[in-house]
Image 1 (cartoon, helix red, strand yellow):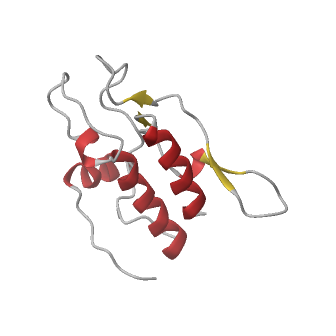
Image 2 (cartoon, rainbow, N blue to C red; image 1 turned 180 degrees about the horizontal axis):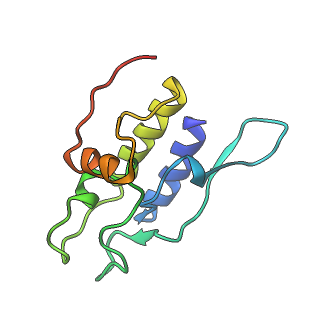
Length: 123
């Protein structure tokens, strides 16, 4: 699954496109017969070199990269590598069945994500 997502990100990033909302809900299986994944929902995707991003701070708390969630300068730019942070969080969920953020509410997860406050632990 991760290999398929990485292939999709490689293609997007080669075109300088950032997904910016990579999360399990935006990963789809191509068919029932074999485990082949594709990336979906490009509603927040953006060209990294755009003069102005439509949405500067975007994504889903619990998956969004620190450079996006902590953005203060609304004229700043970030790079497609932001999607790799999100993929790492997805990978952790696939491996251990739980998020690295322990918050129970939206605001708790948001605060932990902002601070990148987590401890990696096994199952």
